[in-house]
Length: 191
Length: 103
Image (cartoon, rainbow over all chains, first blue to last red; front, side, top):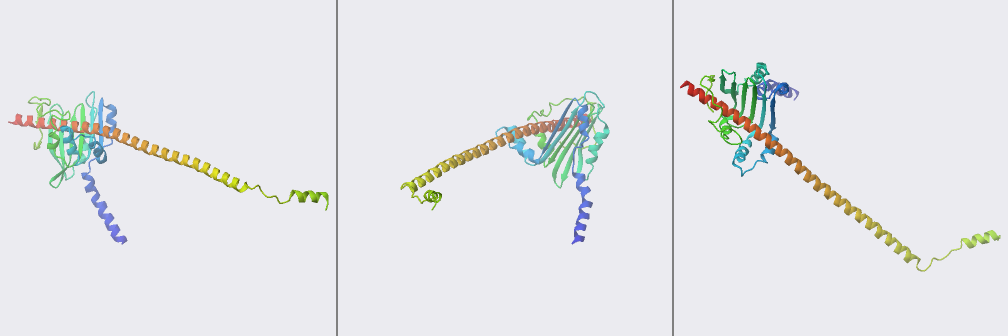
């Protein structure tokens, strides 16, 4: 009996790093950036809070109904966004700490866009078989750092479908860039 | 028999109560019981009303608290969806523009 418990414990311990590798958590270190930021956003909505919020979304309002439908499949939404007065307020180590968590076998980077202005945006997907288990958007700009983690079954298309709703700019109305501003960085444009 | 003993005997002599004594005692007992029952009834009613008020007040407060938390969560959710959607839009736009540049 004792041996089987020991074996189970060993198996559990040996498997735990694999699970941990897929479990994305926003680093606590990011709190220090908030002190330097001109503006910061910290949204942490776990499953129960999402359900609570969902109960207050109207079924009659088309925008809210769409979000309500989407939220039903989610386990959490976490957003950290910092806007700084000047450049160099966050280090690449801060960004690397986030990227390091997305190196697991189930995470794949589907988009990476780098511009000569120093804007670096990446989109990562967590794959659970054929399903998408989560999305992480990492947007590192000289004066802005945004990390969005949507935990749960959702596709980027679903989020994009909200274009023109909920205050999300309609596709084609976002800021236009010049020809030399942006350059793709080896990623399939699936969005 | 000494005068003292005589006096004592007289003092301790059995005396019959008045004819209506029993009726008066019973009536008094009944009145006290009714009075006590009345007070108990009032207190009991008061306790029930107070309990009801506390229960209703508690429920209303809980509902209000839930509504406040729910509306705050809704605002946060809309903000989160807005930021997530906007960022994805920006990425989409950049990718589309990059594709145009490539062509």
